Amino acid sequence: MQYQDILNTIQLELISKKHTGKVATYIPELAKIDPKKLGIHLYCINSGHYYFGDSNERFSIQSISKVFALTLAMSLYSDELFKRVDVEPSGDPFNSLIQLEYENGIPRNPFINAGALVISDMLISKLANPKKQFLEFIHKLTGEQSIGINPAVFNSEKAYSHRNAALLNLMKSFGNIKNDIQTVLDFYIYQCAIEMSCEELAKAFMIYANGGKKLSTNDQILNPQKIKRINAIMQTCGFYDEAGEFSFRVGLPGKSGVGGGITAIHPGQYAVTVWSPILNPKGNSELGMFALERLTTLTGYSIF
Ligand code: DON
Image (cartoon, rainbow, N blue to C red):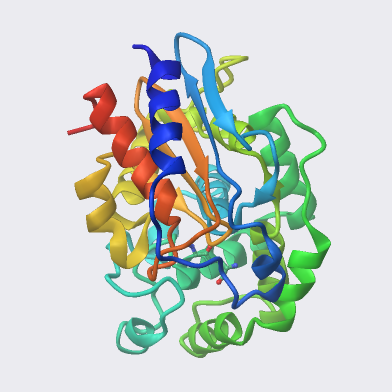
């Protein structure tokens, strides 16, 4: 497959592509990002890596961190984890409160904010130093020890976290949060404030394309059955109330973040990350979705 030629074609198409979205503003620090940033990085299982644009610049991974959190939690818990968070698409925005009330504080899935807050709570219950161990997990997946958080983004989200605090309080009232609410909120926001480049994210996501094994060392990070399940949740829930649209247009499991990143994987083939901070109304990168739709169209391969 001529991946570099295909990426070059997509880059040209993106330059002339009209867009209507805006960068995220509800976390004030994210509003400062240059909307013109654009990069893509694709890591293949067999044959190297391909890229263009700002693919080596770190950005706020935001909700893409939810995949790492679930992976770490699934390495520490058995199926009991899924008694506290379900695996159904929500069809609602990522920070919605509505379903939680009539579904007794059990979030629809681990990739909406409510679900990721429960996963954060579960990680706190098992880890002696959750922040440090979470970062170490990402260092292990990428081999990059310098990955860390952006403190300005962390503080900015902390100052505007009323909705996530509301989700936590509601779930605590149903008994589905075990630890102190501020501690869980702080840890969740910390994960979202981690910065990684397209290249680092694509490298980290190789475990989902490679049956749970790290490509460079063959380390089995998680067993294939658990990886299959995470990929299934990415496919059905990775884009909130746009999960159907992403499946329809792109046809790969993936996860987005309001920093403008999207990472997707083709099992057995590749992991790819695209970054463009302009978001559509559902909070997913507008040009990122377009780029990935063109990737599966021009290669002729998706998982379907
Ligand atoms: O909790 C929040 O609202 C953000 N830290 C993360 C949301 C997010 O990335 C949604 N993704 N598209």
